[in-house]
Length: 582
Image (cartoon, rainbow, N blue to C red; front, side, top):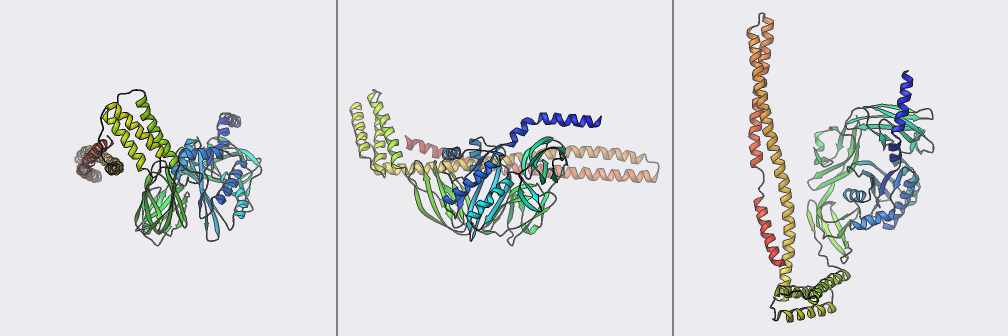
């Protein structure tokens, strides 16, 4: 009877999980072109193409078409090899409705070619796979790519201690305790337990399951006869030991752990993490795998670092290229870089390409990168022509013209004259517009000189930059005020709770004392006395915590930074911007 029930449950689970099996067999993945570091873009595209072909041959993924990848990058103002960081890759994956995104870099150091890859879950931004391969030539790398990619797809097995591509497969029903855990076959997520997993390689493989901090794994020899695997999960953590001569701060996924000299870091979540060491003008970064019930040992040799504080105009990107470094950025931010010389190339579809800009970054220094870009002749012509067409339309349709309109037309003429490009035709059209507007108004309109206009335009640009800086500072202070407010109220709440506990402990102490007075034997009296002392200590401790929290609360509230100086300055800046724009 028990056998029949198990068999019935087995077939019910097969039926219920058919849809999830189909969905997880071919996961939708976006393969981002590899970042070429000290190699040509042609070499990077060659390896990228071979990797893409091997990935499709695994039949474990639905690989998004390369043309769609290119279009998605162009919509984000990137060219084909410009998506070099996690944030860009995740945004691209969301735009293309990918479940995972895979990015990497191809670099050439000394006599080795190194391909580093990582796979990111688009839904939560977590790094779910990381690996690298090193060869002495690109031809050798192409030959090794098939095994490397099939390993990523979980389609390998171990034969005589050698990793080999699986050619035969089976189906395995996997159960876990507790249930509804993520199932991984050779590191690749395949479903949720309990589940019937298809295309499981025959041979020796690793099956793992995880649910939060609960983890379990088994090395299983899959044969045609192995149809069911049970995995027990237990709360599992790992530890990290960092060997480094530099006693600087250690960060794991942007969370401060301490310093290497403080010993091993315990109770860390298992999985792939971003490890950073930074401070004193030194920096080191890599992806590390924390394994359950094991101590991961990392030898980290921090290098001298500085930073580039960049502010790139909208619609443009900046390629920052060093001897062993390449990163493409846009917008504004701070980028840690090794000490050295850098060549900057700034591009954008509406801008003239700016190249040959050089920066030298010393140890511990923050170097500013704020390129002064000029619109391309084609874009600027289109921009000015559109404004002139609008002005001509106003005049031709008989709208009421005022002196303010004449000033706008003359400002447009000056703007065209100040352009680095020569637009004699547009200047003539602007003059014609102004003459016709003056005739309509019936009087000459006096405006400031070209030099005064240029000065006002420069001031306006400075104010716009300052407004952006103030808005960022205000948001930062609001976040700090929110943190301190939450901390203050939390402390105040703990004070009330501790006060309530003090009252409870005092009551229990009185009750214990009454029992002590009614004691009839020495042993009973001694026992009651110990209880009274315990509750008294608990009462005083709770009162102490309550008082301490009560003191901390107003300190946190009162130390909250003021927004008024920044908001007052922002109001003043916006007022001046409005006046200049008028």
